[in-house]
Image (tube, rainbow, N blue to C red; front, side, top):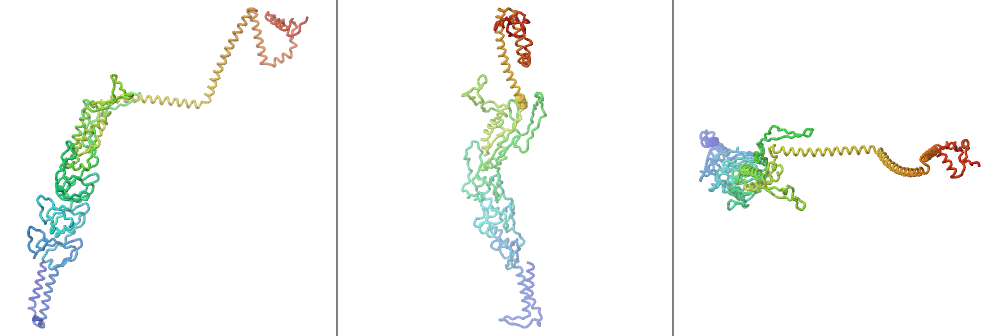
Length: 622
């Protein structure tokens, strides 16, 4: 500005004052042009002054805006004052101008004289994962009760970012509902204030419950809605007794929306719409630790004797990730810590109910369900429950019906050992009672599982000793069966290895049995023979007398021996016959046939056998 004034002053001095001081001899001829006369010399000086003035005007009438930049204009002179509380001029008033100069060469008369032009402004870059939250410094005022300006009209869209378009088409001053998505923009600082904020993400496995601060039409891509005519709270349609009252409203109203956002990234104004992520995956709430575990160890020595020992108690600490410590239940006079694992889940449809009714899933767990779970567990484990048992008679024998035991349902107090023997029934009863309580808080219970109970070892030692003794007895039976099997196997193996010997022995046994049978038969025959002989001898004795009978038997024995010897040694008999002549007796016995034999026999029986002729069978001499 000062340079321009100096240039104009210098040009004016050169045009108006300098020619007066030019000597006449340098002024040149007087020239008259259409009634105007001037000296040629003074005319040149005035021309130079005019050029100096024109050069000053031209030098302040253009600007060259570099790439990636833009120029903002502030009117200083000749525009008049802004009225009606306006801040940004759209008709050339003095002050901040709505228009900006984009990259390139711009020429306007006296541009730099009438205005202050700032060509150092850089384009505004919004990186990925960020949004630009806009606040307008000028525009129409917000309506009563309105917190955020209306969204940019769809027909103009992002062109509303231009200050001239914004101010001439109903743009409202204040926080804007429309945000800038990742890109590059020319931002007129006279109108806009831009703040970078993170885009709102809904992770996989979650839904985004929207708490809205505005009443307006919605377009979030996956969730769209016209501006609702009414924003009445949606009533509990399921009519669950005791269900929490959750003030849920239709999409587009102020409050917690009924519909939730699916997983994804949303470029929305976090001041207008707060997205509350709710985990819809199955949640595992563990109640464990915070107690002392005592045990009694049983062992068996080589002789099968059972001994027991008590190691130092173990302190079971509560993990920081657990929902709470173990639940202590009173059973048969004992305080027994019971560990639980509860699987819960919030459906996408119930996520808004959780936020509006309680606040968050963690608050549902801590404020509502954990106290209920602890109370129900104590009631079930320390109270009574229904079990199925075999019906028995007065002798404690099962009652049968069509050959099958009769099953009856009875209610009885829960026993400590039921935590082991009847665990599924207790788990089912706890789960059955917890589910309606969780449903009141818009949470679904999927399952309840009991951990290993820390039953006092005094209650378990008798049972475990009995089990161990039974197992030892079974082991003894199994070992004996194994030994018997091994003996049988070894016996079979030995039998196979000595099969030829066994066959021979078996044949010998069979042969001896046959021989014994033959001997018995022979003995019986001999007995019969002897009996007959005895009878014959008795008859002989009656005829011949005892002495003669004895001699006859001796003779028969000698004859038998002679014939036996002859059978065994035929050569002796042959030699005897060949020399028979030498032994022929000279005695003659009268008679023939049986009479001769009777005579010989009579002599033998009388003991005169020496008188018999050696030649038996010689003809007698008469």
